[in-house]
Amino acid sequence: MNARPFIYLDANATEPMRPEARAAITQAWDLAGNPSSVHGAGRAARAALDGARREIAGLFGAEAANIVFTSGGTEACALAVHALSRRDVGDAVPGVVLAGASEHDAILRAEPAPHPVAVTADGCLDSQALERALVALRPTLVCAMLANNETGVINPIPAIAALCHAHGAYLHVDAVQAAGRLFPEIGALGADSMAISAHKFGGPKGIGALVLAGRATRALAPLIAGGGQEQGRRGGTQAVELIVGMAAAARAARAQDWGRIAALRDRFEAQAVAAGAVVCGGGAVRLPNTTCLALPGAAAQTQLIALDLAGVGVSAGSACSSGKVARSHVLAAMGLGELAGQAVRVSLPWSVTEAEMDLAAAAYGAMAHRLGRKVA
Ligand code: PLP
Image (cartoon, rainbow, N blue to C red; front, side, top):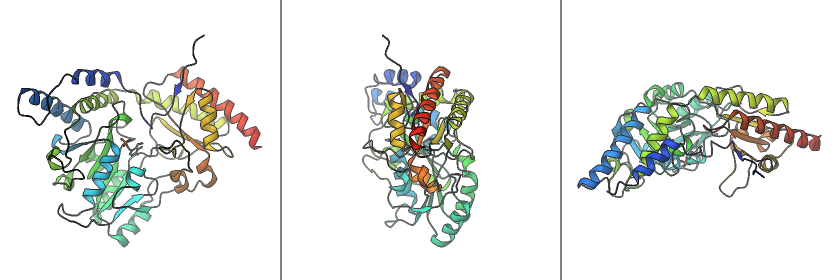
């Protein structure tokens, strides 16, 4: 008997590795040298690193010199908050940091701790609340995500950037969920820094970058000084193999037909709504692969388990590393009340098929019917 296939719809947690990334990494294992060594083996590793850096920079509209490789999105955000909360590189005491209430914990738990700014019912940063906070608190740095990890809702970053700069604040954009699904150019966003992470676009886990522009390209106060790599902005021998895989994944993601993914998402979403679901942030501009579906009266944890038993892997946006599901701070910030504990995130990976989405929709419909009857 054939085992039932597992349908993976948790791409916002991590995308499956793209074959192009796997091939590039496999080849790079043969680079024996350290990219900081001056001999031939070191130079070969350096050439691979520089090539990947140029490619990633080009895809995100940055100068190669303004890419700082990190261990992922969390570290890239932590570095931005640490460095850009200081007006000058030598400042021992950081200034005030603001962040949208629906930001990821990579921002909300960074140091110094940001002051939360309200989001609208759609999940976008509330520009009036932001302006009031800019006037009252005179922050050094504002953090606004490009796309939300739970709802896929996209913030109007260019307008936010203009507002921040008019008040003399830097803008850091957490683009971890957007990068590779959209290809935001840092200049067009108007951001001073932008965090990206390879495993969200089909590259390896444990590698990401902080992309810098404008005033932020000055020397940064590093979080990790170490041996002065990355122009003194982030110490530690670069993970050349992972960086090469990240570049290959970004290139492949750029060639992806995201219209196909969006059409599959839209069809699934319509079927879920017909089964009783409410789309969280459905009125906003969103990522093509994400839908956040609340089922009134049904706990998110119950839905996760029911779908897992049916062979469909989704998540509640608020699942923490312990695997427990808490009420979503994102949906709570959007004013969704009880629904904040009753939503699951369905995020389609680049590799998903129409047949898989049909099976997933049937599983969702059956679950909604069963749980709906229990609730009624
Ligand atoms: N920012 C957002 C919006 C995310 O969704 C995530 C991961 O889920 C991160 C930051 C952290 O990225 P990483 O897993 O690469 O540390």
